[in-house]
Image (tube, rainbow, N blue to C red; front, side, top):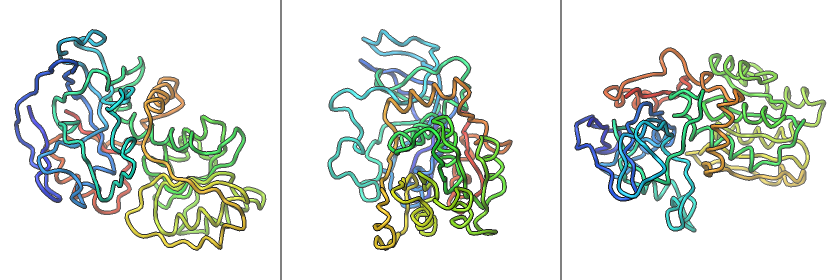
Length: 337
């Protein structure tokens, strides 16, 4: 089978490797679509992945074969490559390691994943794709679960005003999940394509921070008080500062993006307003299932993250990762196997 092997910092090799065979309690998945995640781009940029690993944790496909003892999957079942309930002792390091640090520990799962034509998973790991959800949408279940997890970790209530800084893939998904939860959403985003996408999924308005001050305008739009909850989906020095500056008294700031530069903050500027600050990381199995339900019901539109140039082949992965190392207005990239 063809796979993209991580060889060293900023280098993939697309080559043929043996197709694995499922053993006891395993399933072999034929990957149909695999999405490129920002964390994979960071691993590529900063050499966080083990040499020889096959990355890719956002994918959909079909069960190709099952190992001994597997009774609840059969050949041809459509599945997402993750989201199953973790058995005791199988929790990922980010959930189980008491001092997990993504920057220093990087990826510790070296099992062949989604940047390959086939991949093995334990039979508990995948979850079924509901009717009406396309392969492309299903491949985005994991990033959608990140958005669902962030909103569920927040204090958002029906009728709240929410601000979202950054309308990349996660920002657009947070926008849609917040709207589904009953919020009125204002977005700050400079790229015109992403701004249009935010409006198309229901944002009340989108502010270009290069044209006007997003803090002043959001305060004005909320009658002088500021948004109730702010999600920073950009993770930049200025966006996190703006999030603290704009949120209402006793409001909440949720950091969803993963910043890769130091973010100096002066707590004295916002402590007196008793702002609640929390982070959000990844998604739980429940968040994956909620994501698929939202897609199936039409409350989440995966098509808003895609464009005519969103689909590539596995042979194009090296050049595409190199391009993604630089700031881009691209929303989401899907590898068609």
